[in-house]
Image: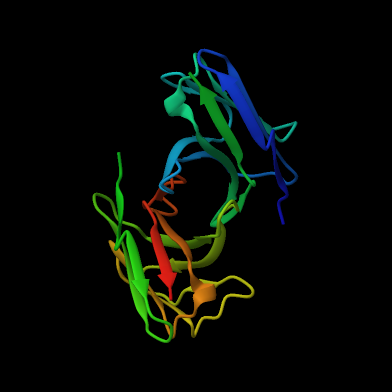
Length: 107
Length: 116
């Protein structure tokens, strides 16, 4: 089983701040997913990474395969970024989910 | 991007009745679909994995006779909660991928089930 840990569990930031959410996993994987879940419950897939770095708008995701660690960064945070961010490790059809980071961005 | 829909988005049913939830991939072939449940303030818990045309593989502790999964086509999977009880009240989410062509996974918006 792949143990997936996220930190922090809860995060409150002022609008405009740079935010980092961390994810570590215990076993080598094929891909690492970052998901966003809004209060209504719907889940959006933000990134799928197998190496290096990806950027989409104000969101940046990085992964270090050797250290089994991934980070999600949000630049110039905005209240609409308030959500739960979940990382999930993936090998084949096996997924292991972190417990999520609840982010609140205050105007 | 690829879209996965779920229907209904919410449902209230009486204890003892059965409820069917549909999960559809709208613009890609979903060779593999996953069903999750999520309790308040908890992460996703995988219930089962289904491949089109095959029987679903259930996770340990999930009753396959209670949670019936059918994946009869490349765009549709259904989850039927049989003889629902209040403890089955939860948020049910499906996801789909075109495996092994792609690792990308696309999530449905979820279905909130309340059993009274």
